[in-house]
Length: 414
Image (cartoon, rainbow, N blue to C red; front, side, top):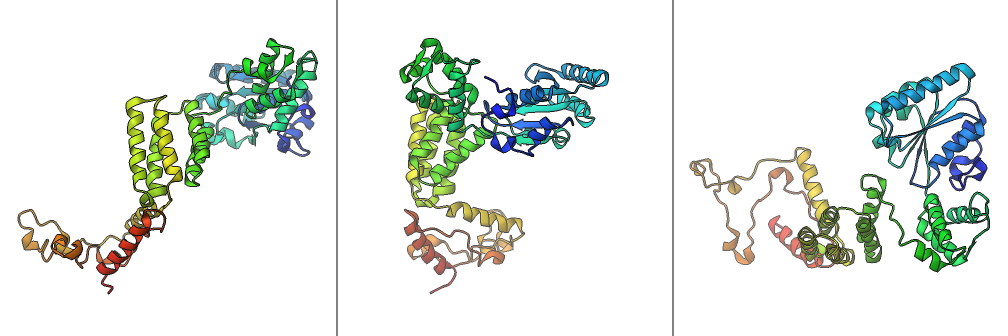
């Protein structure tokens, strides 16, 4: 079912319109180097094939999973001979190009720089992290997007009717079509794989047939790539937004994809102080307990402890006063606002400290009413600085009132 022309390509409309780099590559004879970056099943290999077929260029495919520098140089040498003898250009397509090491990517540079080939590299990884700068700077970077539900539906409907697919020999019930679209998750290749599996069971493809053919949807998630960062970002932001359901969804997504549960637990512990803080001090206790439980029992049972902590964090009142306080204090220190420790607070336990005046006139708070005594604690340079500014959320409200009274007392207010 691979498209044979750009007009047959479904999705990626932002790359296929008039005047786009792909259109120019097809419509002109000039060589060009491209990186196609996008999730699996969005058409990266398809676009490379289409460029080759439509322009009648010679097509050579190399998989970065199995090829080495020798294979790359052999392909480039063959392309140069073909160009010199017949004038026919070569499309050198490197799939999974992010798997090439630096030496292998360096081997591509002469061919790209001298335009001996039309180079197309496909990657599911962010090329700014995985591709060397000289190669990336000599190429256009085109970003492919996951297919929408309507796009996947069009792929499936074409496969049912087209002679290259099922050729009308099977019928696809509307609810079965909807299920296949949902299971595909924007991956056209996955949708066709599931359709083929269902068609092998029955020519009358119902939702029951689909459920029998497809045990469950595979979770697209790369622990080293963008999906890892996108999902953990959505996870944190869902807890911050107090949406426990959304947070549990992302938790389940990470667990099912094989994410390290200790990583998830660490993020929850950070969140408990960064986004909840003094608004619910017990939240940190729950997060730490969940992290320890995961260490003790692992998965799958540990997912219950993680879910416990996630729900607590999501539904707790929120305050970022703690993270703002330490951020402001660190910022002042880095700017040089340090100053001398007041003499009465200095260590007076070692011999000779008393002669230096260390600890002299220090007032022991427990000897005073309410355990408070007015004396200078901060260096003079930051005496008027305010770092902890509590919110009035949850348990932090009474803390805010108490801190306001204590601060006024210590600073000398009536």
